[in-house]
Structures are given as structure tokens and as C-alpha cells.
Image 1 (cartoon, rainbow, N blue to C red):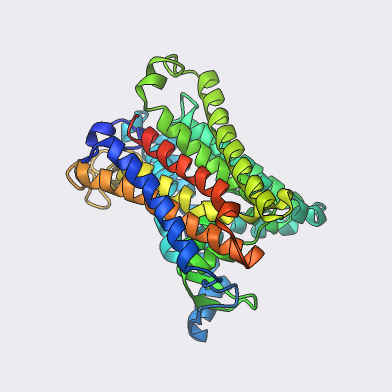
Image 2 (cartoon, rainbow, N blue to C red):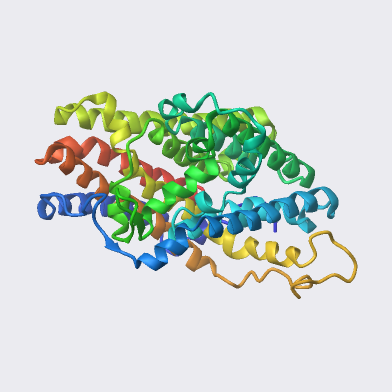
Length: 434
């Protein structure tokens, strides 16, 4: 199996005709929109103050600094192990732990971990531990006052860099290159944290921001007073602060996933991508992000104009409604990668340096079980994730419109809904090589 193929099926894997899937998906969005207009006439999800408080004892354990330090220390040890394996382990990509640990187990596994446990990388981020240990050795952070004005734009940039590295750079699977990226990323992020303070990680570390956004669809949340609560995941998403750069982050996630799908089409492989060089890939990635950005800006600004709302704030206001759409695409593209290729991480972790006679976990002799999930199941998950993400996005957009206008009209929301339908049809078409 080729690393970074992402494991998604081709259009022939779909157990129903592709045209029927496209029409059905688009119809599902429109029907759900019509149902919302008829039956959902006032805000129903609750706000930041909603939720069932968890026991005080449990919150004390979760928020205990000692627990976070232990978790971050374990994460730092694993990071060091992966870098060491990249530098001193087997040279062949298929036998080296580092690429599989980074691209599959960490990057893809961050999604289910954040959905189930909340913003896990904000708790486990080892760079926060490094910063706290080294902070006494450095002067006070002079950039702290400027950090709020940056919003999430730094995270959008760092995510774009990582996604370019993952999807475009020809040598991305080389173990030495993986080590260089991990060390370089840690040095840059830590350096910026020394300048802007520890709050930098919540705004500039793309992995932490990504985990936090995905966690907006988890059942765990916090009230304004800091109390940990259990609540409707949609209420969590609705309560997402509309900070500058939020729209940029979700657009980068959507646009990069669209590009990922495009690279597996026959048109790309026999045309722009035939040379397998950085230039065509970079232009394709930027074009995918730009196309999604233009469509999203048009939809949100036109919806705002029809509703009599300031056009400039609309993209930021509705950005949280795109989080489930980005999540749906992520699940569709990477589900089988995690289930199938993810097994390789645990096989190689049993002997990270490829030493003779070493088998720490008793898995080193295993082979990937390609029957763990069948092509029909993969296809159903792919279609279901995309459609569910868009239906949820429409629901959140309608709730946000009601919160903003109280008497939201169909005509006000229609431009954004049309954009979501285009995302659905285009996303499924690219997913199955249309």
C-alpha cells in the first residue's frame, strides 16, 4: 500500500450510481433547508451558558496542572521518539515509523480524538511544556498586546504550510524530511510563543486550533464561567467565537481537501500533476483554497446583503457553520486511511528502530489487514459523512441567521445554501474521481 494515498476509493467503489448519489446529496441539503424554514422558527440550540455541569471532582481532575504536565510530557517523549526513529530508523518509508505516525495516526487520528474527548491537543501539546520550562530563561514576551488582533490568521498560515508539505512536497514521505519538518515546526512555534506568550499556541499552532475547532462538535464544552459541561454538540458549534481568521482556517481545510480529491482524478494525474513537481501542486492547492474562499465569501456576503446585515462581518459570523462540512470531508477522505494504513503505525511502533530481534508490542511481524473494512462500507461512510456534514452546516447556518435576525427569511439564506449544495456535489464528484 502506498503511503499518503489516503485510502479513499475510486468512483467504481460506490455501490450506487454516482449521479444518483450527487442528486440525492443535493436534494438532502435542500429538503433539510425547507424543513428548517417550516419547523425551526426560533433559536433552539442554546448558547454558551447551556449544558449539564459535570461533577466538581471530575473538573478538578481534568483541569489539574499536574495532569496536563504529565500528558504533555508523554506527548513530548513520543515526539522525540518519532524524530529519533526518523533519523536512526530504517531508511525505507514503508519500514520507518515517523511518516506513518505523523500523517496517519496523529494528523488523521486527531479528528476522532477531538470529537470524543474535546480539544485534546490544547491539553497535550508538548510545545506548551517546552515553553513553560524555558520561559524563565527568556525576557518577557513583548508581543502579547498584539496577539488578540491577529485572531486565527497565524493558524491558517501554519495549516497551509503543513497541508502543502503533506499534499504537495515530493519528498514528504522521506523519514529525514519528516524529522526536519517536526523539528522546524517545533522551533518556529516555540520561538513565536516566546515573542507572543503562551497564548500564541491557541492562535498560531495549526494543530491545536484544528483540534479545538473539531472539538466544537464534541459533547464537551465550557460555560462562560469556566465550568465544564455536557451539552448538545451543535450548541458548542454555535457558541464558537467569531474571531478574525476563523473563516480563513475553515476555508483552508475545505480547499485543501478539495485539492486532495482533485489529485486522484485521471485529469490531474495525466495533466497538471503528471510531472509530480512542487509548482503544479502548489498552484493547484492555492487554486483549491482560493475557489472555496470565493464561493464562501460570495454566499455569506450576498446572504448578509439580502438580510440587511453588514457584509463585512458575515464570513466570520457564519464560519462556524462550515466546521461540520470540513469535518465531513475529512472523515470521507481519511476514514479508510486511518482504519487500514493506521495499522502500520502500531506494527512499526513495536520496533521503531528496526533492530533485529526487537518486538516490544508483539506486532512487528503483523501485516495490514485489508479486510478490516470493505469498499462498500468505505463508500457509505464517505457519502454519509459529506451529506451529514452539509445538513449539519445548513442547520447551524439557519440557527445563526435566527440569532442574528430573529425573523430569518428563505431568500436571505438561499445564497449560502446554494454554495453548500455546490460544495456537496463538487466534493462527492472529486471524492469518487468524477
